[in-house]
Amino acid sequence: MRKLSGTHWTPVGIAMKAISFFENSGCNSVLDLGSGVGKFCLIAADSSSIRISGIEQRENLVQLARKIAVNHQLSNLEFIHGDLISLDLSDFDGFYFFNSFEENINSKDSLDRQSTLSSIQHENYINALREKFDALPIKTRIVTYCGEASEIPESYRLVQQSHKGRLRFWEKQI
Image 1 (cartoon, helix red, strand yellow):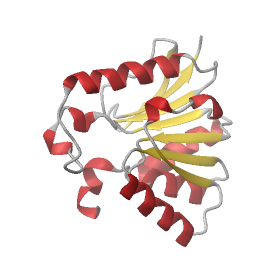
Image 2 (spheres, one colour; image 1 turned 180 degrees about the vertical axis):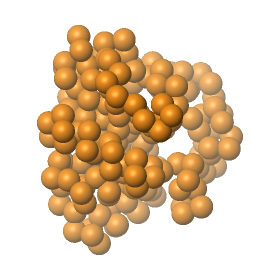
Image 3 (cartoon, one colour; image 1 turned 120 degrees about the horizontal axis):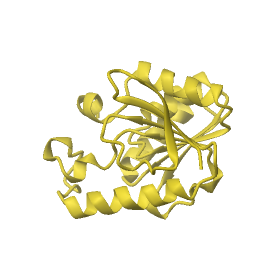
Image 4 (cartoon, helix red, strand yellow; image 1 turned 90 degrees about the vertical axis):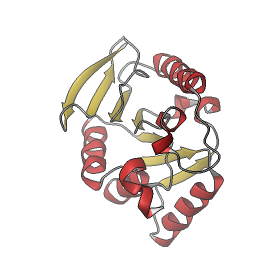
């Protein structure tokens, strides 16, 4: 997993900036969409009192993340094994998204043999997430890292960005 870290998991500095944005915005519960081995979640939970959750479809990665969380005694953290498309997002007021669907269109981003290239699946995930984000209440916050941010609906406003536009901070306006 360490070999894949540079491509798939959030750098520590990015995680710290994201959690700072969520804290300063008054978020109480943040969900990492496609949490992998939980790097963002672990850093966020260790450095914040916000309730942090991660959802990941690969059970082996969820089990590894849970083991690490237990070893570090992080009580404000949970990992969910499942598909984020079927998850109800209404329990969260902040979301972190690090280009989780990229592996569907880029063979270099494949985590395992379960991954198959499918631009249709990629587009379906983007559209479903956009609809879910659009249905959330005003003041919902999203942080995106890398990617085109095509999952962000027009009801959100870009309020801040850094790292040459790769790290973006969004707030729902309407």
